[in-house]
Image (cartoon, rainbow, N blue to C red; front, side, top):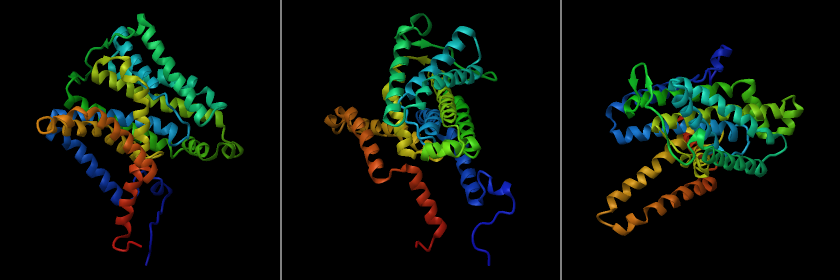
Length: 347
């Protein structure tokens, strides 16, 4: 009697979802994604759009931090470059938003190449400080380059249109956001199965050994910075066209820390973790606000301290995951799947 999983072709082994149960789970998830906007309220549709956008950004940051091991605190800067790049292309050059988004991604990738240059000599905490400096520089440029960005004033752009449909409604934007997140996940999944992706992981595990094996460490790090920045720039462009109002206050250091929390809580170096982390970090403030609104009439004092509770819960979740489950929600999901694989023999 055969025991285990056997593949007869190399293409079967390299498939993204080689097992029937995996394909079934993916089909059920896709079905839920399609049904959701028809039964959800506008409030939950808005949250779903925010999750889809955040997932693209988390995938980009995870590509750099989780897969390549390059610490970055400049996520907000890359988001700002993508948002202002796409917004200005639409506003000043009358480009359609679907064309300005990938161009903004390329602009952000070029900025990522420049910011990634210190990675030749720096690593760990020193690289994190370098990206933090880039975050501050980009903020200063945005707020002081008045004739281009408007400075501290908000930049208002027209509502996006696609095939004659206005995407200013959450229901319409939902399909575009989900499709973009799916394409980003598919891109990262295939990239990590390629030679370039394996080079990323080799550098993360031990860059000296990777160099000894023939990996061009510096070039690979720059590719990781550029690819990550491309996805993050697309995320910034999506934020700009979803909100139609661009302001530098959306892309501060707090935003960088929020996205870093997404991949820590979700799971470093995993695609599922990017989605899980984005979902939790986006929904957590909404759930706390809902609890606060329900307490306004019964316990007014509790409602007044709600903002502090939200910040405390945010930090507490990060600490708990770092201590109790460093591999994040993705590891918990793997544990659940493993239980079903061996059930009823738990040993």
